[in-house]
Image (cartoon, rainbow, N blue to C red):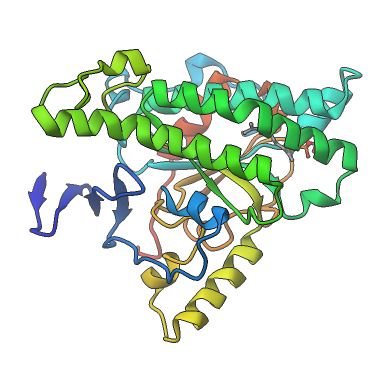
Length: 335
Ligand code: FPP
């Protein structure tokens, strides 16, 4: 059921939930349970970092036959509802590489293929938000050679990743403290994010201008830009991200704003501003811990741990995790 609440917000009633779907500048849409649009944080800085943020198993081998999705559940936003955002801790790249006598960097490179697979499966299920923990505030403690190889991987692969995502109608955004990155990487983050933003916006402008799908104001067909005419979701990459660091940063912003803040105002100071809290966290690699990821946001997230190493986490494994999520009874403190 849909109704317009008169403030440019369409409120969508789904079982046991009210979700607000609102067009914003930074994101094509924001879906949040029982919440109004999150507040703007005070503009403390106009740095590139701020711009980057602002624009926008079980063990054992599951088989396909273990998965009980009905075919009708695919290709609908929020498919069976309640699964809007999946966050991933992509653990096991190093061990995957070591077991093949390869350098650890080869494991991270292979892990990129799993990210692509996860995006494909999420789009098929109509799950609009994905977050990937790609580099933590603690990962700087790794050997310099590995840190350097990860930075190189970001620089070389993010531009093509942005292009592929835009073609699928997906926006790219980043979460974390980017002040420590070199200018080259900051530029790449900003342009990768802006590229997917403007790609989709050019389609939206065309639609608004003349109601002609696939045309821009200039008359250039959007197919020439390689951009799809609808936004299917957001891929959020967490870089130099630490949950504690994020909370301390948000507290400092609240202090700078000089007032007591509500929960929803506080959430507007987090790097994840505009994203709904994850419904499901998947950690691969066999460890059962959170490792300073989304400490605030995981409040009511369902946790799923897989023994598979990230590069070998397959489509079937992911489908199995999604299926497991739908079997959970989420009560959010209620009976
Ligand atoms: C943890 O596994 C993984 C990381 C610290 C890095 C993950 C990064 C990627 C998959 C690449 C991201 C790149 C782009 C362009 C988005 P680990 O190395 O700690 O595994 P281990 O526990 O086996 O050592």
